[in-house]
Amino acid sequence: MKYVDEFRDKQIVDTLLAQIRKYSQKNIRLMEVCGGHTMSIHRFGIPSLLPETVTLLSGPGCPVCVTDQSYIDRAVAYSKLQDVVVATFGDLVRVPGSTSTLAKEKARGADVRMVYSPNDVLRMAKQEPHKRFIFLGIGFETTSPAIAASVKRAKAENLTNYFVYSAHKLMPPAMTALITEGIKIDGYICPGHVSVITGSSIYNDFPEKYGVSAVISGFEPVDLLQSILMSVVQLAENMPKVEIQYTRVVQPQGNLEAQAVLKEVFTPRDDLWRGLGILPASGLALSTKYENYDAQKMIEVQVEPLKVQKGCICGEILKGLRTPIECTLFKKVCNPSNPVGACMVSNEGACAAFYKYG
Ligand code: SF4
Image (cartoon, rainbow, N blue to C red; front, side):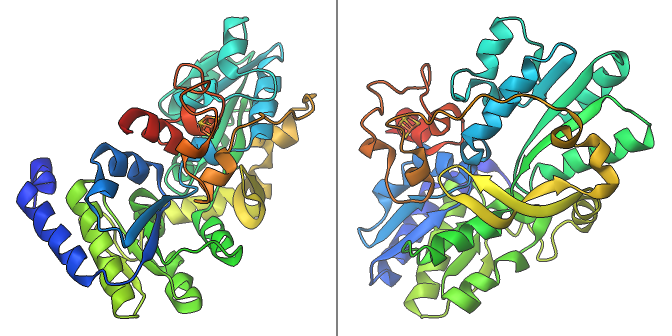
């Protein structure tokens, strides 16, 4: 198949659904761990098409959502410094910190700039050498290689006013933590874009150690239904394994060049996740060679004490324990114009998906 409408073809969808019904004899719970999947699943109404035996759960796959509130507080504190420019991808500016957001600080006069690429920030840093530019580096293995490459370039060009405030996360430790915490997950619908970089072997532990299926999926309805079918068949035959459905994009070995730049610039560290707490070796800090570009090491700032948002159950939603409609604030107080938590801000958040598509 080549064109997008083929991946939305009703006849193919019906055939896949019939196959899923045929093989789906026992109750199974599949978790998607990619915000893009969450949005597609709800946009195309996939849960309503599936037999009752298949339950879909949304996991910790939205980069903005998993970024802890304390990170936002520190970013807000950076934005208040006189000669500092905070540069970020769009969604993050609206995520509530303890008492403020980057959007509010921008309205008060802080220099907060929304960018599409770290290269934009490098360009600005060169043009405005009297300012210090802090790029908010969040996201998984998908986005971190581009940020790693920007740090390498800054070093090569002797740029001394470019810094990264890293909250980059690694996907497998969070997926492992959910299982070891005892959350019932029979199979993972693994993230397509992350896997383009990492390849498929990062998921090997799930079938081998935990008996959990792992299917790397694309984003269209046919992709997702085919991935669900592959998971259902694996589990029906009691033979969980790692499979790639998204073969038009994902190679088993991943992108070796991107992996190399990540390994050179970043080093794994224990990291804090919204809702999941501190997970061992689950985040990326700048390596010693590049520590002069690490905002946390190079730029001191006073951060206000953490004040947790009352009533927001984002953390439990990210673990697949509850759904947005179980949150008492959903739609009543919390909506995309007035988000109380990160899961409602992000385009990839479960609360935003439920709000938009019901
Ligand atoms: S609906 Fe709003 S308050 Fe409730 S969990 Fe989602 S983001 Fe948090």
